[in-house]
Image (cartoon, rainbow, N blue to C red; front, side, top):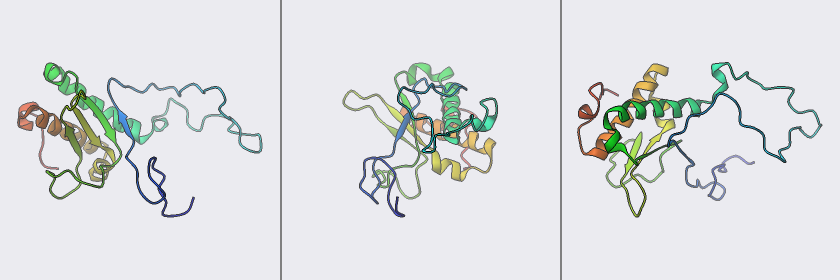
Amino acid sequence: MAWGTSRRPGGAAGTPGPAPSRSLVGTRHAGAAPAPTVGVRRRDRRGRGLRGPLMPSSLPAYRTRAERFDDLVLDAVESLERRWSRQLDGTEFAVEDVPPSQPAPWEVGGVPLGRYFPSDAGQPDRIVVYRRPIEIRAVDRDDLADLVHDVVVEQVAHLMGRAPQDIDPDFRDDH
Protein backbone atom coordinates (compact mmCIF):
# COMPACT_ATOMS: atom_id res chain seq x y z
CA MET A 1 0.00 0.00 0.00
CA ALA A 2 1.36 3.44 -0.89
CA TRP A 3 1.81 6.21 1.65
CA GLY A 4 -1.08 8.65 1.95
CA THR A 5 -3.82 6.17 1.18
CA SER A 6 -6.62 5.29 3.52
CA ARG A 7 -7.11 1.92 5.16
CA ARG A 8 -10.57 2.79 6.43
CA PRO A 9 -13.48 1.06 4.73
CA GLY A 10 -15.91 2.91 2.55
CA GLY A 11 -13.64 5.57 1.07
CA ALA A 12 -11.53 5.87 -2.02
CA ALA A 13 -7.76 5.98 -1.68
CA GLY A 14 -6.81 9.00 0.38
CA THR A 15 -10.35 9.82 1.49
CA PRO A 16 -11.55 8.50 4.82
CA GLY A 17 -14.78 6.57 4.92
CA PRO A 18 -17.12 6.31 7.89
CA ALA A 19 -15.37 5.37 11.11
CA PRO A 20 -16.04 1.80 12.22
CA SER A 21 -18.19 1.66 15.32
CA ARG A 22 -18.18 -0.97 18.04
CA SER A 23 -21.53 -1.28 19.74
CA LEU A 24 -21.29 -2.02 23.44
CA VAL A 25 -24.83 -3.13 24.15
CA GLY A 26 -24.30 -5.85 26.75
CA THR A 27 -20.88 -6.81 25.39
CA ARG A 28 -18.05 -8.18 27.52
CA HIS A 29 -15.01 -9.80 25.98
CA ALA A 30 -14.02 -13.21 27.28
CA GLY A 31 -10.41 -13.96 28.07
CA ALA A 32 -10.10 -16.67 25.41
CA ALA A 33 -9.47 -16.04 21.75
CA PRO A 34 -12.37 -16.64 19.35
CA ALA A 35 -12.50 -20.06 17.71
CA PRO A 36 -11.07 -20.15 14.17
CA THR A 37 -13.56 -20.38 11.35
CA VAL A 38 -13.49 -22.98 8.60
CA GLY A 39 -11.36 -22.01 5.62
CA VAL A 40 -9.02 -19.72 7.54
CA ARG A 41 -5.45 -20.08 6.38
CA ARG A 42 -3.30 -20.93 9.39
CA ARG A 43 0.13 -20.96 7.77
CA ASP A 44 2.22 -18.42 5.95
CA ARG A 45 3.40 -18.88 2.37
CA ARG A 46 6.32 -21.05 3.47
CA GLY A 47 3.99 -23.47 5.28
CA ARG A 48 5.26 -22.77 8.80
CA GLY A 49 2.92 -20.31 10.44
CA LEU A 50 2.92 -19.43 14.12
CA ARG A 51 4.13 -22.06 16.53
CA GLY A 52 1.86 -20.85 19.30
CA PRO A 53 0.13 -17.76 20.64
CA LEU A 54 2.29 -14.66 20.89
CA MET A 55 0.91 -13.74 24.29
CA PRO A 56 -0.66 -16.14 26.80
CA SER A 57 -4.26 -15.21 27.59
CA SER A 58 -3.42 -15.04 31.31
CA LEU A 59 -1.31 -11.88 30.85
CA PRO A 60 -2.87 -8.40 30.86
CA ALA A 61 -1.19 -7.48 27.57
CA TYR A 62 -3.25 -10.16 25.81
CA ARG A 63 -6.16 -7.75 25.49
CA THR A 64 -5.91 -4.91 23.00
CA ARG A 65 -6.02 -1.27 24.01
CA ALA A 66 -9.42 -0.94 22.29
CA GLU A 67 -10.84 -3.88 24.28
CA ARG A 68 -9.60 -2.39 27.56
CA PHE A 69 -11.16 0.96 26.58
CA ASP A 70 -14.48 -0.77 25.83
CA ASP A 71 -14.39 -2.26 29.32
CA LEU A 72 -13.86 1.21 30.84
CA VAL A 73 -16.93 2.51 28.98
CA LEU A 74 -18.99 -0.50 30.10
CA ASP A 75 -17.87 0.01 33.71
CA ALA A 76 -18.95 3.66 33.55
CA VAL A 77 -22.33 2.72 32.04
CA GLU A 78 -22.92 0.00 34.63
CA SER A 79 -22.23 2.41 37.48
CA LEU A 80 -24.78 4.85 36.06
CA GLU A 81 -27.36 2.15 35.33
CA ARG A 82 -27.54 1.27 39.02
CA ARG A 83 -29.13 4.64 39.71
CA TRP A 84 -30.69 5.59 36.34
CA SER A 85 -31.73 2.21 34.88
CA ARG A 86 -35.26 3.31 33.97
CA GLN A 87 -34.09 6.48 32.18
CA LEU A 88 -31.29 4.66 30.34
CA ASP A 89 -33.48 1.75 29.23
CA GLY A 90 -33.04 1.27 25.48
CA THR A 91 -30.11 3.66 25.17
CA GLU A 92 -27.25 2.30 23.10
CA PHE A 93 -23.63 3.02 23.95
CA ALA A 94 -20.90 2.72 21.33
CA VAL A 95 -17.21 3.43 20.89
CA GLU A 96 -15.65 4.88 17.76
CA ASP A 97 -11.97 5.49 17.26
CA VAL A 98 -12.22 9.13 16.13
CA PRO A 99 -15.04 11.62 15.62
CA PRO A 100 -16.12 12.47 12.07
CA SER A 101 -14.13 15.24 10.41
CA GLN A 102 -17.23 17.42 10.03
CA PRO A 103 -18.35 18.68 13.46
CA ALA A 104 -22.00 19.01 14.36
CA PRO A 105 -23.40 22.55 14.06
CA TRP A 106 -23.67 22.94 17.85
CA GLU A 107 -20.06 21.95 18.52
CA VAL A 108 -17.81 24.96 18.81
CA GLY A 109 -14.03 24.45 18.71
CA GLY A 110 -12.03 21.50 19.90
CA VAL A 111 -12.38 17.80 19.28
CA PRO A 112 -15.45 16.13 20.81
CA LEU A 113 -14.81 13.31 23.26
CA GLY A 114 -18.34 11.93 22.98
CA ARG A 115 -21.69 12.63 21.37
CA TYR A 116 -25.33 12.06 22.15
CA PHE A 117 -27.62 11.21 19.23
CA PRO A 118 -31.34 11.50 20.08
CA SER A 119 -33.73 8.81 18.93
CA ASP A 120 -34.93 9.25 15.38
CA ALA A 121 -37.03 7.21 12.95
CA GLY A 122 -37.25 4.11 15.11
CA GLN A 123 -33.62 4.31 16.23
CA PRO A 124 -32.98 4.43 19.99
CA ASP A 125 -31.00 7.12 21.79
CA ARG A 126 -27.31 6.56 21.24
CA ILE A 127 -24.22 7.76 23.08
CA VAL A 128 -20.90 7.46 21.26
CA VAL A 129 -17.54 7.78 23.02
CA TYR A 130 -14.46 8.58 20.91
CA ARG A 131 -11.47 6.48 21.99
CA ARG A 132 -8.43 8.21 20.46
CA PRO A 133 -9.11 11.79 21.66
CA ILE A 134 -9.72 10.51 25.19
CA GLU A 135 -6.60 8.35 25.21
CA ILE A 136 -4.50 11.30 24.04
CA ARG A 137 -5.74 13.50 26.90
CA ALA A 138 -5.20 10.88 29.62
CA VAL A 139 -1.96 10.97 31.61
CA ASP A 140 -2.11 7.39 32.92
CA ARG A 141 -4.54 4.48 33.27
CA ASP A 142 -6.30 5.93 36.32
CA ASP A 143 -6.75 9.25 34.56
CA LEU A 144 -8.09 7.41 31.51
CA ALA A 145 -10.72 5.62 33.62
CA ASP A 146 -11.75 8.93 35.26
CA LEU A 147 -11.92 10.72 31.91
CA VAL A 148 -14.02 7.96 30.31
CA HIS A 149 -16.39 8.05 33.29
CA ASP A 150 -16.71 11.84 33.07
CA VAL A 151 -17.40 11.77 29.31
CA VAL A 152 -20.11 9.12 29.75
CA VAL A 153 -21.65 11.12 32.62
CA GLU A 154 -21.66 14.31 30.49
CA GLN A 155 -23.41 12.56 27.61
CA VAL A 156 -25.98 10.90 29.89
CA ALA A 157 -26.62 14.31 31.47
CA HIS A 158 -27.20 15.72 27.98
CA LEU A 159 -29.59 12.84 27.26
CA MET A 160 -31.60 13.53 30.43
CA GLY A 161 -31.42 17.32 30.27
CA ARG A 162 -29.74 17.60 33.69
CA ALA A 163 -26.46 18.84 35.09
CA PRO A 164 -23.65 16.24 35.21
CA GLN A 165 -23.38 16.75 38.99
CA ASP A 166 -27.02 15.60 39.29
CA ILE A 167 -26.24 12.41 37.37
CA ASP A 168 -23.10 11.53 39.36
CA PRO A 169 -21.95 13.45 42.46
CA ASP A 170 -18.35 12.32 41.77
CA PHE A 171 -18.28 14.12 38.40
CA ARG A 172 -15.20 16.29 37.87
CA ASP A 173 -15.15 19.10 35.34
CA ASP A 174 -11.40 19.77 35.47
CA HIS A 175 -10.33 17.83 32.35
